[in-house]
Image 1 (spheres, helix red, strand yellow):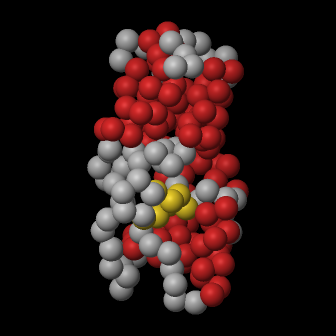
Image 2 (tube, helix red, strand yellow; image 1 turned 180 degrees about the vertical axis):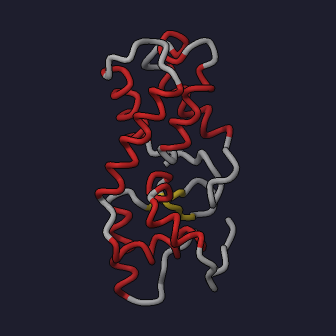
Length: 166
């Protein structure tokens, strides 16, 4: 993963965003595809993918092939982000939400019991949890997993789990 946000996702990491913008810029003419201010349209994609290059390239490919014209609009981007969110929602099982909530609040591996660890590993395997190892290792939900209504509802409930920071 390329770190595009700090734990909890509130604060964008400009260095990570610049790095991924450069990756896309090596493959495409940014202004032709994303307009005179590419960051206005590209940054939401970068943040929505959580710095996961595979998702970034998939969303950009979908924009290129969707037939919506160029430069792409924020509305086209939002449609592709919604499509990505639907893909992640279909990969999320109800019994995994507790583990997602714990990871979202602690940014750490849940070590309370073997079942939680096993669910955590399955979530990592399906990229619903992302591992950031540039600097201190920490974990967070893929932004599309965080966007799932079931997860948002659970995150909105008060809890005794305190964030670890990182």
